[in-house]
Length: 367
Image (spheres, rainbow, N blue to C red):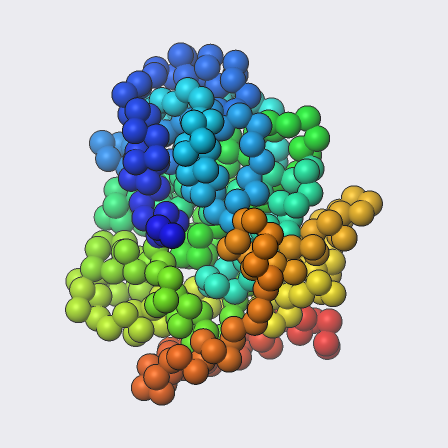
């Protein structure tokens, strides 16, 4: 299966919806269409030339696929995408695009391959929830636009924060009458923008899910990731905290370990803005605790039972036919000892600190 989530969002959407760039609307015309068409949401952002927002009508289809882009792909393949067009990036400063938005109830940050998709898909099982699972525009396009392809930092200016808020709210608009709550699971490297996101939505609780880095990297090397696409590009400087040119010839394992160590450091220094949860503590019994104490969210009657059904199945199978089987031991065994030492040198001490952190939900409970 093509890893759509690992590629730049605008490139994927332009391939899935070939005619989307043929129509460019003014702000007034776009607002009129958005407010008249319940299913119109941002699906990507092209950062070129100051940025363009790509909009598409996805109707009332719920986000239940394991990634946002696979929802777009499924609808496009069925011919179920309605009108589509582009606008200037500046439309995100226009509050008129907010047609019945659902304010987010929780954010999910993560290190990758650590139960974040499982958590998001479990939430998505409730018809009352709109779950943005690594939403296209939030993955790369927005950040590439406001940093001019990582030429400078993503500054939390009033305009940038407003554009981000409006983007999230425009994506999480109510498209079905029963929808009441929304949640956003970011792509893993967006963890480095946790401070920016917190400033945009200071009252929204957030969790940071993490896992033994050897297991994560073994999985990533098998299935790829967006941060490998960034290796040798300016974005890699942001991901690693070093000159991006140093990553061009860098070994993939060391590069990934450095990136994940950056996530761990940022989560550790988040000063109470995010609750830490180890992958080993995510299961049907703890899920109610994660929702109530981690995300400060109380589901409705019968929703816990509905959501924990997801734990029976592989989170990346949308058919509910492939049952989940733990592969942690297999992943560790697949990693050569030399690579394991590199990963542990970068990440092991940080993992231990996360496990003991006062912001770790299950360390709090054990204490």
